[in-house]
Image 1 (cartoon, rainbow, N blue to C red):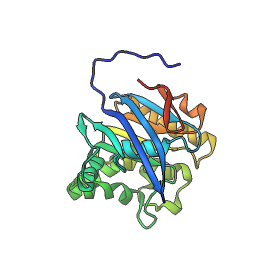
Image 2 (image 1 turned 90 degrees about the vertical axis):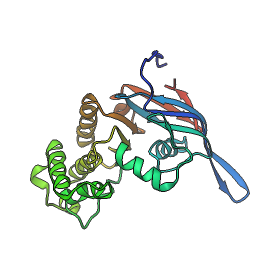
Image 3 (image 1 turned 30 degrees about the vertical axis):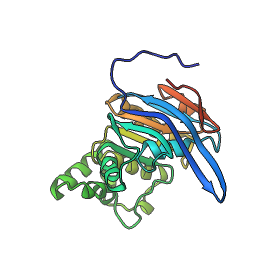
Length: 234
C-alpha cells in the first residue's frame, strides 16, 4: 500500500467524485465511478489497471480532452468540468503537454514543423516558435533530425519528437498515454528516462501504462479497477 503523506502545497490537478457514464442505447455504462484524486506539483504519477479499468477515460478528463458526466475537475484551482471547448483548448495548449502511444505526428511535416504547430495555435511569434522548436529538439537529442519527416525517423526518434512537441508551450503538466507501447524495451526505457529527467526539472508527469516495470519508475502508482481507484489515491 502507498503511504499517504500530508502536503502543504495545493494540488495542480484534483478530481472530486468524478463519474463518466456512456450511453449505449438504453444502457448506461460507467467508465469511471466516483474518482477522488489529487496530483501535486512536480509529482511523477503512473496510472495502472487492466483493460477496461478506466485509465484512458481518466487521462482524457485530466487532460481536458473530455468532461465528466458528474463531479468536478480542478486544474490549478480552476474548475474545468463545465468549460466550453474553446476554453478547454486554450487551457490544454498552455498548461498540458501530451505524449501518445501512436506518436500522432503530422506525416507531411518535418520534426521541427510538428513542434512549431502547437505554438502557432497559441499565437507565439514566428521567430520565437522556431527558436523554441530548435531548443526542445536539441533537448531530446534530435538537433540533427530537425528537417526529417516522421517516416524518415525510427519509432524511438518519433516519440522523442512527440516529447519535444509536448514541451513546445512549456506546460506545467506532461500527460503520457502508454508512451512506450510501440517501442522495444531498450528504447522504451530511454523514453521513461527522459520523462523522469523532465520530472526532476520540475514538470508534473502523469503516465498511463500497463507495464509494472515502467510504472515502478514513477514516484506514485494509482491503481484502477472497474472504474474505481483501489490503491494509490489520497
